[in-house]
Length: 110
Length: 110
DNA sequence: TATTTATACATAATTTGCTTATGCATTTAT
DNA sequence: ATAAATGCATAAGCAAATTATGTATAAATA
Image (cartoon, rainbow over all chains, first blue to last red; front, top):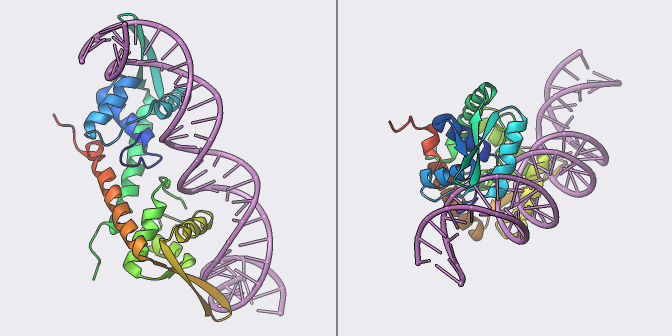
């Protein structure tokens, strides 16, 4: 990932939120969607994404489903019930964090 | 640092922005200011802060000044010219990054 | 007045979360 | 024919935190 530096810790909520919106996605598709949604700003690397997906699956956040497409196999991921709860929580934490940094962008309070 | 997770990479811009606003601060003061400004949300750990300050000084971003207060020695940090430029840049990158994540918080584009 | 908490610095070991590099295989575009 | 895109995966290395520890003074509190 990169172009504008990726601030670490964001990849997980990004992926989970995407899965929540889109329902069911495979790894490569996630990289392309993020690239699109961020107008090329964020480029997720596979070295970051795949291990994360594996970890989230192991934690019971994601379910997987293999699908043969043409001659290739795609691995689709979707949120479990736990994963949906986890997403809500991750988003709340993210928002709170962003909120707590508002002072950085506000004009000085005279 | 912690309470809400600290997303990695934010500490540097936070510290630099603070120094830009306040002019001249010592380490402990920075931890207290951040705690105040974030209403207790972000608690900077010394293990993160001091090495960062040392690194920024080494990179020519910060100047230091020792001051004896009572019986203790405080080490004051302030931005150099390079540091002020660096702060502007760091803030721009941060804002661009935040901007590129807007889609995560916006209601679905029907 | 003894003890804890706050102030003030610092460093080392460890963990986390990425990047970079590599590998393999198929499909599409040049 | 060759390169680029699609699709998965893992390993090595690095940077930025956390956690733990150490030292010392000052102020608050039991």
